[in-house]
Length: 169
View 1 (cartoon, rainbow, N blue to C red):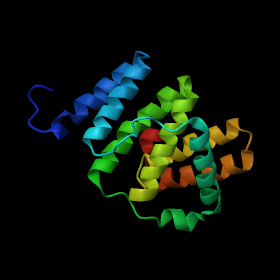
View 2 (view 1 turned 30 degrees about the vertical axis):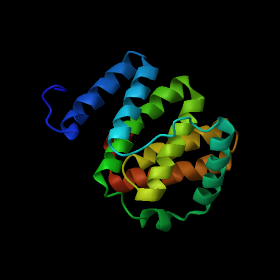
View 3 (view 1 turned 120 degrees about the vertical axis):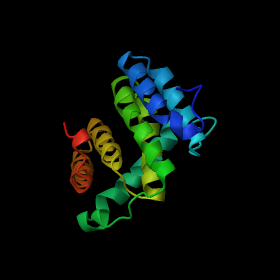
View 4 (view 1 turned 90 degrees about the vertical axis):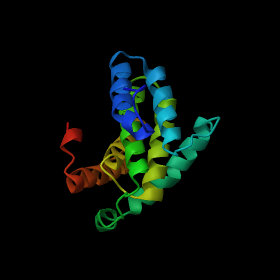
């Protein structure tokens, strides 16, 4: 598939399958590295050195405050992501949430932050609900139960808005 593809977009489904296979084999670093390689081809650049966890955590807390104040109506009326490269990028980042939730909380924070950034910059999409639910889980781990509950409610609203049956569990 990779050798015969005429354009990079033709390789995306194969990459998605390969990333999921690597994750299923618990080769999480390889899956994460491959995913970020695909993202760079889609125009989503990762900083050469990821910011330290304390900086990401600080920025997540600022976003958390904004999200807590967001009304249901405001969220539901948010613009939808129409940039196909960014929608694809979000779909590649989504499995990494699970892989890193299980193994690497530091990388998880950075992926959640990256997905939140894309959501805020380009609009909401199906995978935004996964990002919000992961943020809710992180906040619950930090014993910020009120914020966790509110952001979890926002995730459910998006799940219902997009009728994302593949993420209901």
